[in-house]
Image (cartoon, rainbow, N blue to C red; front, side, top):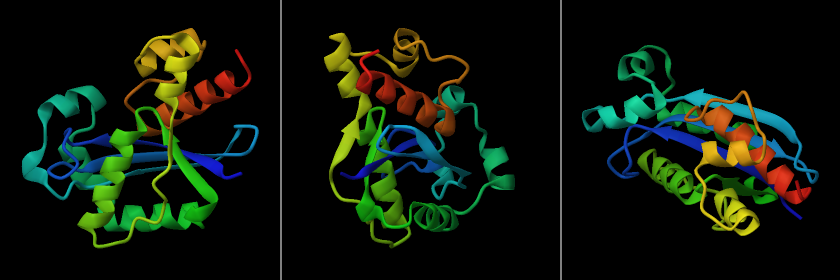
Amino acid sequence: MKNLIIIDVETSGLDPVKNDIIQLGAVKLNNNYDITERFSIETKPINKNNWDKKAEKVHKISLKHLMSVAFSLKTALDFFDEWVGNPKKYLLGGWNVCFDAAFLLESYKKINKKFLFDYHFIDVNSLVYFSQGKILKLNEAKKVFKINNYNIHDAMNDCISTALILKRIKNGI
């Protein structure tokens, strides 16, 4: 059985072709769904002209901040690849993981690098739907599963919350 890496991205907008990842978070989970490692990095957007002020209001990360402290996308993805190690050992998962995976895949294309994960993903939001009988936003699911102290729209916090929700589903809580 493959272990999971839960990913989350914050972006400069909603279109993975026009917009960019500005924050990438990830956690590795063992077979008990415990977090064993964490990864978090901010990236400078490639397409600064496509910066969406609505997205900034959601994640509260400014373009000015990123341009002064963040890594280039290539450097960030090189660090991510090093952290992952062998991607064949892992499945990617997340909250609405198709959104995050689309941005991650497009980001690898933007730097002319091969995306090494396979096409299988675990969408925790879908698992919540089957356990609760309705679609929930992450902040709503956190309330249902009694997960506190993690603000949403921060990539690392959203990874941790998603991992905790997944573990609670697994344990029938």
